[in-house]
Image (cartoon, rainbow, N blue to C red):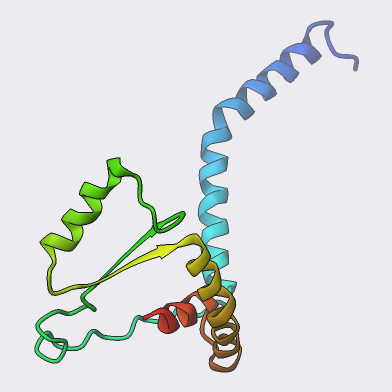
Length: 135
């Protein structure tokens, strides 16, 4: 039996409207399913961070007392020198290091190889190994 002249257009419009109204729900279900599948099927093992040493063993601080700042070169512009000095003045017990771009690239060149080797042999991420070598 043939369709009425406007029935096909009305059915297509109703289907389109239903898809538009259902899209947020379809998207949410898909996102949840994808996330669940990624965590369930992923071979990625998340390493737990190493416990911090007790504050007494770390000189009273649970993290290293170091301040690292970066700049293009050793000549920090005048408008930033007050901020740079305040970090040093407010933390007199901390080791302070200003890294230039050249020093940072050299560190990556030299220690990056060792970090990659440690990551391959120890199964840890390159970023974690690089962090170890930096500190």
